[in-house]
Image (cartoon, rainbow, N blue to C red; front, side, top):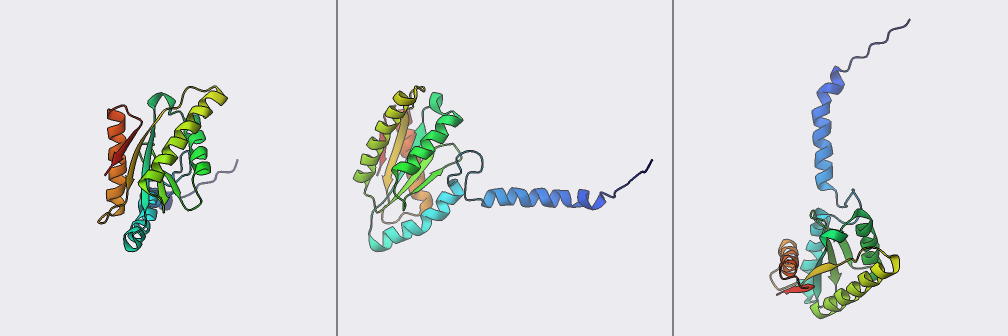
Length: 179
């Protein structure tokens, strides 16, 4: 019989460093690696900051929509179908992401708040149709809509949209607008 020994001292010494680098890489990632491969919250903030600056500089509209699915409809399969729907119903210049709570975030460039509300109505109709056609449990969603204001930064506009979403859920209304 042959016996083979391998010195693993170096591997064990480097394991904490490797784990630390892996954790840091996950923090710096811009996309959700688990399910939808959409932008994650960090990716949303990184992408949103220059858009907010451009909106302020050129006085052009920029809207953000936070969308949360009803708890009973928030299965992985439903979230994937909704992510495809959002990608399909937004323009190429718009950004679609998902925050750490599993809520969808739409960044709508050159879009006023009124136009964002029209998109919300359109998405609601598509979700209703999707439930009927695929014979899946009804997919209900709440929306928080806001528009970029003069002194906004990426974090402020995102928090305002998420706050409006929380208000819509609390009041059990479909959409809340943050001013």
